[in-house]
Image 1 (cartoon, rainbow, N blue to C red):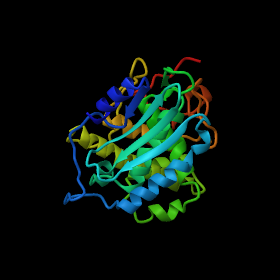
Image 2: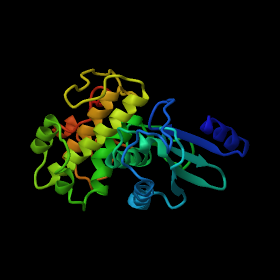
Image 3: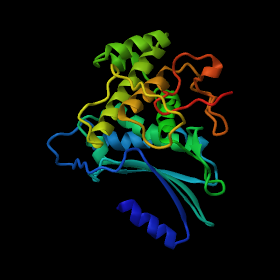
Image 4: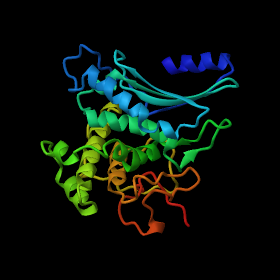
Length: 288
C-alpha cells in the first residue's frame, strides 16, 4: 500500500517510477518489541547500510542521485530498490525495513546480502528488463540480482575481512564446505562459505515470508529446468542455489558483469565452466 500511494503521488507530479522488491508481498511483521528477533541491533543496522551505500557509489552515473534508506522502526519484512525519473531529477533508492533485519532467521551477513541484492538490480547485468526511460538504467531480473549479490557484491564488501576467523565459530553444512573447498583455496574458500551461509539465512527468511513450511537447504537443490529464463521470483530453494553458485563462480570479482551480455564477468558453459553457473531452475543459457 505504501508504494502504491507513492506511485500515485509520483504520477501526479509527472515523475516516472519503477520498483523491485526482494520478497513477494507478505503479511509478516517483526516490531521492535517482538519477543523473538535476530541479534541485529539498530547500531548494526545503521552501520551496515552506511558502509553499503559507499560500496558501489563510483558505479552510479553522475547525473543520478543515490541513497539507501533504513527504516528501523518499520515492522514490515521488506527491502526494495526503485528508480525515479523526471525532467528535473533522476534517482536510485534502496529501502530496507527494520522488520527484515529483526526476523529471527536473519543474520548480519544475511542482511548484507539483502542490500547486495538491491545493488544487483542496478548493476547486476543481463538478463534484465529493458530500459524504460532515457539514462535511468536497466533493471536486472530478480534471480540475476541474487547471482550478482554473491558473485560480485559480497566479495567486494568482505574482501579485506578475516573471513577465516569469521566462519570459525559458525555451523557450516557439510555440502557447503565441500563445494567451497573444491572451488577455492588460499582463503577464498572462507569467503565462499561465508557467502553461502548468508544466502542460507536470507533464503530461509524469504521462505518464511512466502509461508513455506519446508525451508531451503544445501542438501535439496532445485532440479527443475526452465525452457526460457524467468523474470520473476523462482522457488525459494532455487534462490538459495543461485546464491551458492554465485559464491562458487571462479570469475574475477573485479570484472563487472554487463547488461549487453550474459557471459561477461560470469561463469557460463560457453567459457568452459562446470560450476558457478546460474541454475537452470530459473536461467536458460543463450546459445552462443
